[in-house]
Image (cartoon, rainbow, N blue to C red; front, side):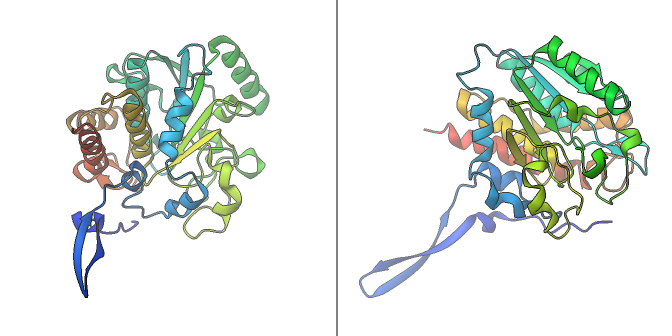
Length: 320
């Protein structure tokens, strides 16, 4: 089992600096408010933070502005995909669906019509009542020709104004899909990449290097320890990295909240309830493969760290 680093404490956001008064120097500590990206990249045991220097400093804000761009004549339809198959458990993982549902609720509140797209393994999770009653379309697990045609027809029918992939495995070399252990999961993964190829209105959220969107930095990923040597190649217009992909989705919703001046994030209690529900419907922890209330080996309380701090971040943002 992968070992996680210890959780950070308040001292990690306290930075010492020196104030000079005549010949004397006084060492004091100043509270530095973390950025959204600091929060969603905390507890990074995979090493995805190594990509941060290649991204804009406020990449969540940039993605939020991209969604709310004035160039879009209307809010239109947001197409959201998620679902990562865990080979050892023969089931989808808990990371991804919670972020997708949170994103759907936020975008619905902002006037978007939301459509989920996933394969048969994650359909039962996204079709549940707590998924905000968004339309859910099953993308078939099929050959490339059939998949490409299905994607073209779906794009023509839905005409999405924005496409968002959250913890969705992406094409690697040979147009195959590989998990973090390098095992081929192509037989269990719908070729949803075809919805994103050639599109200019796309966002990808990932935490490991093998998700849709990581093609933006495939060359860099290959050189980094603990990240896949055969990364995803599918690119997106805007990429969000996070220690946990759900946290990346929460970070994007936080940035949308700032732009709209209202908190679109759910509560920690809601997250825990939804985690119990997705596990009851068959989802498993993506690291251990166990059917338990955990996300990437963080139990429910540990996993709540990011959402707790992002809600606090927004509360501080609205204080006079």
